[in-house]
Length: 542
Image (cartoon, rainbow, N blue to C red):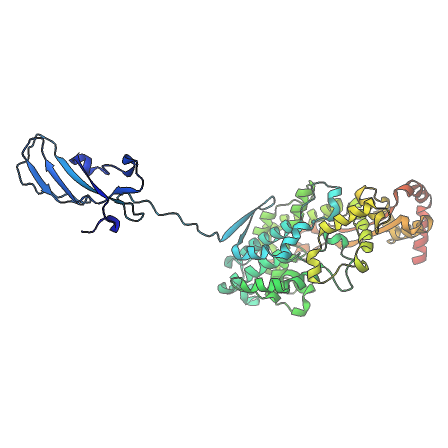
């Protein structure tokens, strides 16, 4: 017979046990002897006797079973006892009478969650996490979403990083809604055959989410504040984004995802047909890009409205985005019959709320006059601090430049009166910004659409160009054109389905700023000359 665990016995132990004691479990453990390295093996022999002397029997057992082969007469008025012989042997981790349970093995986590104040959780898998951990994405932790807006709204310190995560999360939700087969019409299936191929939808969902995650990697320090005048002609943050998506580091990541992604597909979806026209996006790819950067329902807009509203503490950017997303559909536009991202009638009010929220937060936050002048002071500093007055368009240089480097330079320059950009830097650090002299208003615009420019030019002659700054945000927004699926099955243009959207004004503003020490005198001057400046300009243009 084999010894327990294949070990030779170290000793034996002989004891009397009642039959009930023997059958109810372990008669003893290694702890009873204070020995941890020794345990009981298999029971190999026992003898039975009754309480009446002289009646003995012998049997063989292995604890798992009990066989009784009595040689003598058994007394019926006494409890059977067992003379048990135990073999003592080394513990075998795998073979003992009280075998230890198997160790729990750690299961690798393939799906991850990131807590978010807007969407509660942002979900991503391990492949997507590799993209998130790349240098271009991690750099966005150091790029403020709203530039120097935190100097006016102290809570607005959020970064492009969390915005990109939010856009990715919303893009996945919208994709799942609009590609649900019970929400796709036969006309759309015919126009977009890709939407019927379930084996390809997984690929395109991954492309969409990665395009959403990477759509802002080309942003310069302090985001839009320094973009227009500080890049070479023909360059913007979208073109930088494209270069980064095609970079060696990102190409290596795209090729190792499951399934592998084509960089061209990511570029077309991240930038849209206007910025990637040379790649000739298909109808399907154009729809996917509309999910991210669309004027009406782009999730880029949805996230920044909700996020910026939250962090600035204003209520203007909030709306029922849950209802809106659940009612989004791919519809045939009533004018062109081309597929476009639209909304069911039940979500029309949410769409109206989104577009009004955009108008209100633009007027109250993005176009706040102090925010605008800080952007100007920042540009003034960068023009003299940067080499040749421009940001580099090399991917390597771009990844090395963040808000941190610029902020450090501003602080140093503000302390040194003879350093480059000292005046602009000190105005930012000491909050000694230029003040509003004139702001665009409806009355003056009706008299002369160029009223703000005329005031600036006249003030510049009166007080000197170094004391004046002009800022113009051209009219944008207003009515939006998207299809609406009515409850009776008709598809209408949005301006035919909603009277509210017809009344939505465009966003536009113009400011004339002046140095603080000149403002009082300038206000008095403007009060005296305002009417003549505007009227004179109208006659000249007329």
